[in-house]
Amino acid sequence: MQKKEFSFELITQDDKARLGKIITNRGIIETPAFMPVGTQGTVKAVFPDDILETGSQIILGNTYHLLLRPGIDVLNNFGGIHDFMNWKKPILTDSGGYQIMSLSKFNKIDIKIGAIFKSHLDGKKIILSPEKSIQVQKSINSDIIMVLDECPKLTTDKKVISNAINVSTEWAKRSKIEFGNNKSKALFGIAQGGLFKDLRIESINKLTEIDFDGYAMGGLAVGEQQSDMFKILNETTDYLPKFKPRYLMGVGTPSDILGAVNEGIDMFDCVLPTRSGRTGLAFTWEGKINLKNSKFQKDKEPLDKNCQIRNLNKFSKGYLNHLIKTDEILASMLISLNNIYFYQQFMRHIRTNIKNGTFKKFYKKYINFFD
Image (cartoon, rainbow, N blue to C red; front, side, top):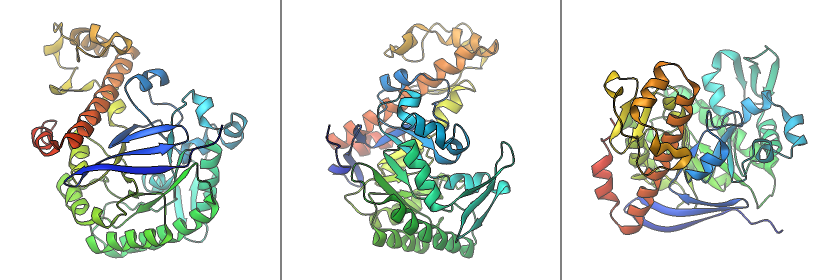
């Protein structure tokens, strides 16, 4: 079968909010889209078939963690992560750039070499160069590959941010050379710049000169105020190419997503639905519900009467409260599945309202609803 070329179609806009679709060799992704996070080849506590049932069209994996375990040899043996984890839809992989920040005590950066890690698992030395990151992502057989970047921690020091842009730009150039010419896959650049408008525009301009299949906003959702994130998106997303997908990395809450869609972002990922599920926090159209609360002990109502996946509509809040208090694994499984289902319903409503020209009304109703 002939492989399809990666492409993006911008269907319509409602002010800055964009409705589109990404065509990949493994299927179409309707945007705005949310990607459940499967860092180590699994979306925690949820079966792949159930993820598919929620309406998820793409998931995310992580280069650094998959390099450590199971490693390139195993991934190559299985022909990539799709068959290994039994997921046939598209997969996007982070490059390992976020781990350069989150595991900063285990690594140092050399612009000529890359990120030099001391494995947090066994202490082994690992060199993650721009070339190595792309090679690992090819072994993973990712459909959307990210360039290796330096994602700095939240700071007001412009010199630190400017240096991260220089490193990320150099690594982006090398990543593109290593990626080569594969029209059935995509390579995304990652813009840095923190909360500085001029630096973020500088980073975007340098990346667009290199020319990528899509563009991500990195270095956000790292501890800044939500209003500051929205402000910098408002000031800079128009500098991104109009007819290529825009990805805000590591975001976030429903209101984070809604506010970013309002500023022209197309793609999102976050661990929040499953991480919250493991702590008893459910996302619903009633708002956030802390199922640990004893007030739910005798509540006979389900989280969502309409969700029939795994018979979720037959499990009461009272039963979920019981599972949490008895520390049963089923609690994490059911609530995580509910949360992914809710997120995908939320994205579907966003897309419908953009299509119908009613996005602003939906935005005003829900922007503060989940606070």
